[in-house]
Amino acid sequence: MASLIPWPWRKKTTEPGGNGGALTTPARDFPTLMHRLQREFDDLFERMAREWPVFAGDFESRWRWGMDFEDKDDAYVVRAEAPGFEPNDFDISVSGDRLILRASHKSEEKGKERAFREQVECYECVTLPPGVDKDKIEAKYHNGILTLTLPKTKEGRGRKIAVKNA
Image (cartoon, rainbow, N blue to C red):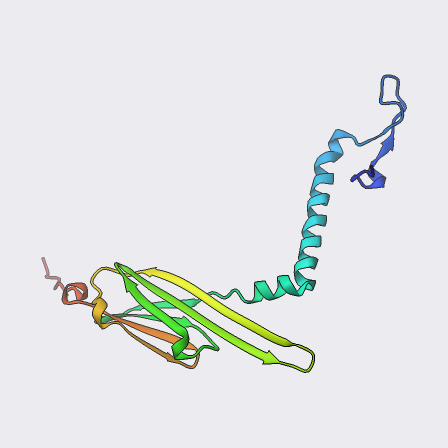
C-alpha cells in the first residue's frame, strides 16, 4: 500500500532495535503533515465544487434575503431584496407571533444544445414584535424589493412621556 506521507518527509531508519529499515516519519513532523493533508483535501473539494455542474448549480440556487427593518411611529417596515421574482411568486403568512416569508421562482431556458431549468427558493421566519396589528399587514413588491408594512396597535405605538424640570 502506498504511503500518504509525501516522500521528502520520509526517511529510512536502520537503527538497532528499529523497524528494520521501514520508512517512518518523525513525530515532530506529524502536525505539519496533517495540516498539509487537510489543505490538499480542501483544495480538492473546492475544485470539485467549482468544476462539476451538479455542485455548482446547487450552490448557486441557494439564495438569502437581504433584509432591512425600520421602526416608524405607526408601523414597522420590513424591506427584503428579492430580485427576479414576480408578486405571485411570494407566499407570505402570519402564524402566531411569526411572519413567514417564502418565495419560489422557476425558470426554464431552451438552448440549441440542451434545456436548462432553475428553481430558486427561499424561506425566512421572523418573530413579530409585540403590538403589531396582524390583520392589517400589507405587502408590496416593486423593482426587486418586497416591502412589508406591519401596522402597530394603539398599545404598540406607545406614548410620549414629558420630561419635567425638577
